[in-house]
Every structure is written in structure tokens, then in C-alpha cells.
Amino acid sequence: MTCTWSTPHSHTGRIALVGELDYSSVEEFLVTITERLEVNPGLRDLHIDCRDLEFCDSLGLAALLTVHRRVVAAGAVLHLDNRRPAFDRMLTITGTLHHLAGGAHKEVGT
Image 1 (tube, helix red, strand yellow):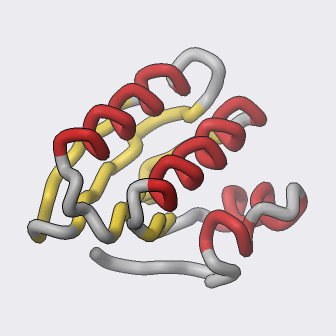
Image 2 (cartoon, rainbow, N blue to C red):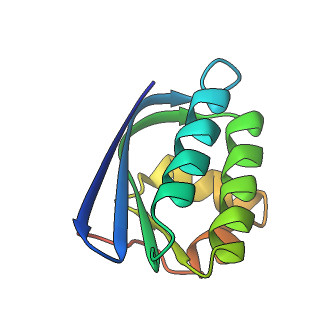
């Protein structure tokens, strides 16, 4: 998996995920998010672009829950943008859709 970070606005961060968020990539994902939150203390919105997220396993979901806690603790809002139907199904089945995405079906664009 690759994580590409950008800051389209001074208070907005965006990370594009490409590949699989699973046991082999969660550490890189968590380190990237943690580092970016530390160097961007004024961040108010973090958008995770899931357009090219091919797969997310239970460890990936646990990492997203951890990211959500860290983002909220930093005073920001987490957005899961461009989610695929399979990803939404997994979030719905696990009861985490509302928690992670505010219950919104899709968030498109950043």
C-alpha cells in the first residue's frame, strides 16, 4: 500500500490510499497519520481518499478506528472519501460506518 499526503488548504489534510490496508501496511499508515498530525497542529479536517483502497481487513479497520481517535483528539474531523461499495458493506456489517464516516453513504471530492 502507498499513502500519499497533501495539504490542499492550511487546515485540511488529505491522504490517498492505494492498495490494501491490512496486516502488512497498517504500521506505515499509522506512522504516516501520527507524524502528519504532529507537524500540522492546525489541522481541522483529515480526508482519507479511499478510491484506490482495494481491500481492508480487520487490522485495517482497527487502524482506522485508531486514526479516528487520534484525529478527534487533535481537534479535527475524519472524512472517508470515495468509498467503494464493498468497503461501505464492511463498515456497515461491523457497525463502524456511522462512527468512522458519520453515517454518510459517500463523501465525494475534497
